[in-house]
Image (tube, rainbow, N blue to C red; front, side, top):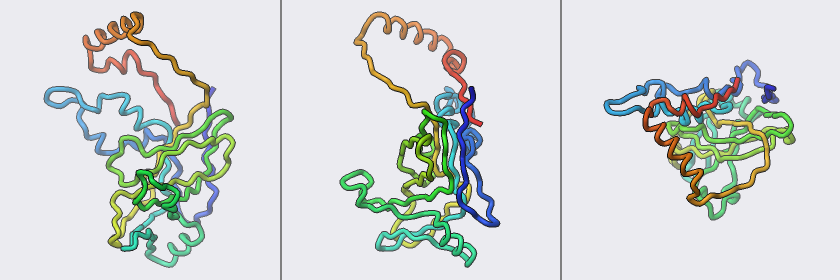
Length: 236
């Protein structure tokens, strides 16, 4: 059975093309595509299937409109608009809000200007499925770092807004453009299941199993995981 994740656009943006969330595999960045599979003495991350699987997992929520932000010397984050049409659109559907710093007392987020992206989408999953909201995985090139959240999107039928930090922003009033279509966060649906943990301590059976696998890997490292252990994930 194929599960269906639904993205409902619930805000009206006249004369504006709103890019829908896309399968993350369609948004692999150019810098990754340019990495060769081998360097002078070994293979590269281009051959690392777990790395690629992470980048292509689930779907990616894209910003729906150009957003220009700046921070005042008082560390207040503000939005800048270039014309009356944009101002009217921002006033009707503000694309960002600030997130009160007092919600993160004595945490690593203290001192950062937390911004909240106001998503125009409701995400709906089948019964029993939740959604994990993550920073775009392995995308250290992006200045947007969302706070991770897990939402039961089968029972919460509402927009999920995304608190984030803009790593380039300083209290210098310099303008920072977040173009429409910028990856905001990666959303990965998953089935809720109960788990329990078990531990083994240097027992013979798992040690023997690991030894056999290690020898097999060492005999032919390149593409071993892809051939012998990988299971294809499909998001369309």
